[in-house]
Image (cartoon, rainbow, N blue to C red; front, side, top):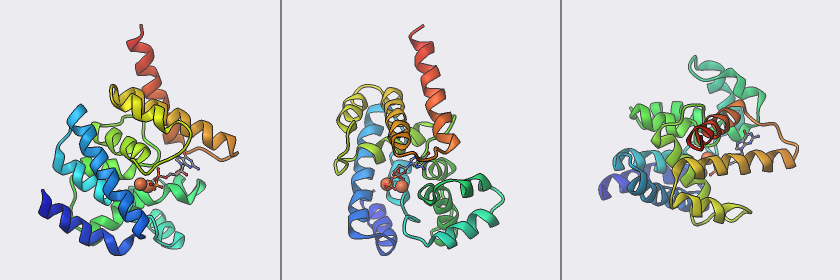
Length: 194
Ligand code: DGI
Ligand code: FE
Ligand code: FE
């Protein structure tokens, strides 16, 4: 696994700032810890973590062209903040610039910013690792870290709830997948609580 991490590092480093590169490594380490606790193939976690922010610094116009030109990217993304684009567009760029990736890795990268209605173990682990990695410091992160010790779904639900509240407090629009992710995890909690 060490050699492949080195290979992934060499590949992503030129595309990221130093700060973003360090974040990427912390996300990957955090995702490994979560996978040990909750399950998930370590190789997939490694690749998803190391590549998740690959497209973060691509020009908006370039990302916009990818969304317009790819049949399998939701056009609706263009109606929402460009901060949401680097996940789904990153998958397309990686396909071209890195090579084939496991479907579960692609899905986790695509949804790492917003979540989605039917999150896989990889989607949840990457989403949460990105939220709680040790470099993050914002109100609620400690609670998300505490929940992540015990319950992956509860921790993701809390992160989604907190993100939605934060965005609303800033009068920002919220991408529907963020609500879909929140709703499906909230419903699951209600079912579990009877
Ligand atoms: O790329 P990172 O900075 O590591 O993290 P990220 O991909 O989770 O992006 C975080 C930003 O995305 C943060 O400012 C909150 C924002 N965000 C998450 N969900 C939504 C959103 N912004 C909007 N406008 N709508 C969303 O649904
Ligand atoms: Fe990101
Ligand atoms: Fe990130």
